[in-house]
Image 1 (tube, rainbow over the protein chains, first blue to last red):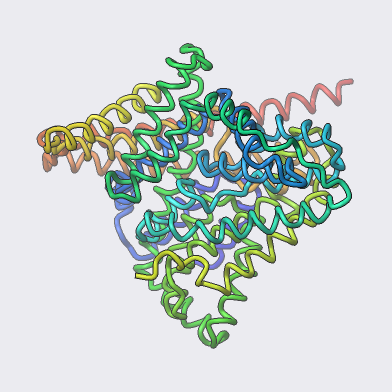
Image 2 (image 1 turned 180 degrees about the vertical axis):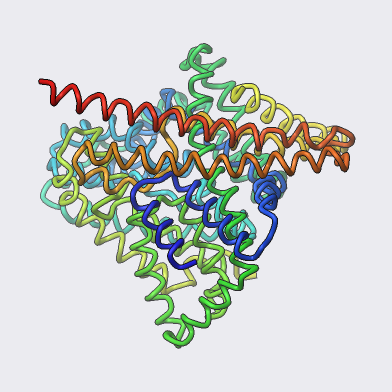
Length: 419
Length: 151
C-alpha cells in the first residue's frame, strides 16, 4: 500500500493529470477494502446531489463574459474617479479594481490578463517604477479571493458543509486587511511621488457611473439577494450569468453573438477540470473516512502538537507549502476534508479555518518557484521569471504578514457572525 | 453540447426563481435537473479539457527539465491516465447495467440510466483521448529523433 502511494505521488509530481491520480488512489483504497469498484460510479455521480454546486459553472461563465467585454475598462475608470484623488491614487485604484474583479471572476489568472493590460501601462505613464508596477499587478491579481462571490469561497462551503452566506460575511474584514496593508505599503514606497491621479471631480464620478450603469446592479443583486435570504447562492449565480449575458451581448453589444459559443466552451473547460477533480475526490475522501484516516492523522498530530497556537503555526506552514505546489481548487477539494476534523479537535472554528485556508492558498499564487500568477505575469508582460520573483517579493512579505494576522485573530473573520 | 447544457441550466434556474416568487410554486424536477446538468457539464467539460490539454496538473518540473524529457514523461503519465479512466469507465458501465435492471428513476419517471450514461461515455472518451494524445506524442518523439540522427 505504501509503495503504491509513493508511486502515485511520484506520478502526480511528474505531471499526471491530478484527477487520474486521485481516482487511482481511491480505487486502490477500495480494492484493499475489498469493496466493489462499482462504488466509483456512485461516488462520482454524487456531485449531482451536492447543493449550490451549480453556482460554480454559472459564476465562471459570468466572469469569462465580463472579462471579454469592456467591463474591466469601465471598472478602472470608476475606481479611478472615486479613489484617484488620494496620494498614490493609481496604485490604490489598481488594488481595489483587481480585488473587485477577482471576487466576481474567481479564477485569478483572468484578472492579471484583463486588468493588468490596462493598469500596467497606466502605472508606468504615471511615473511609478517598473519593478514596483510588475509586483503590484502580479500580487493584486489574486487579491479579492476572500470577497463574495469568489469561487474558492463557494467551493470551500460545499466541501466543508459550512454555510456559504457565513463564509461571505467572514471574508470581508480579512480581505479588507490585505487590501489596506498592500495599499499602505504602496503609499510608503512611493512617498517620493505622492501624486494624486486626478483631483476629485463629481462630474467624472457621474460620468463613470453612467458608463457603468448596466454593471452597477450586479453587486447589489448578488450580495443583497444572498444576504437578504431572497435567493440561494446558486440562484444568484444563475441570475448573474443570465443578466451579464443579456447586458454584454444584447444591450451593450460588446461581445458578438458568434463569439458566445467559444466563451461558453472555454469557461466550461475550466469548470470541467475543477469538477472532475471534485468528483473523484469525493470517492477518495469517502474511502479515507472509511479507513479512519482523519482520525489517525488527528492522533499523530495530537501527539506532536499540544496547543491551538502551535497547531495554527504548523497548519500555516503546511498550507504555504501546499499552496506553492497545488492550485487552490484541487487543494480545497483534497485537503479540506482531512484537516477539517483535526482543526475541530483543536477548537478552530470551521468558518475561520476556511478563511485561513484560502488566505494562505492565495499566497501560493505568488510563491516561487511555481506560483501561477508569477507565470501569467511573466508571460503577459514579457518579463523574465526571475525578474517577476524579485519584483513580487516585498508584496509577498506584506501579504504573509496579513495572513499571519488573519490566522491568529479569528475575531477578524468572525466579527460579523457574533450571533 | 456544452453550450446547450449551460443555456438550459441558466434558463431552468432562473425560471424556477420566477415561478417561486411570482406564483409561489415550482417544478419538483427543476432542482434535480439543474444538479444533473452540473454532472454533465463537469464530465463533458472534462472531455473538452483533454482535447485542449487543460487538465489540472502539477507542472513544476516542465519548467526546469529539458524539453524532450518533459515530452517523454508526458507520454508516460498520459498512458497512466488513460488506463485509470478506462477502469472507471468499465465500472461506471457495470453500474449502469444494474440501474437498468432495477429500473431506477430520476426526474419523476425518467429511467436513471439515461441521466447517468454520461459517466461511462465520458470516462471512455477521456481515456481514448489520453491514449491517442500519448501515442501521437510518442510518434513525434521517435520520429523527431530519427529525423535528427539522419541529419
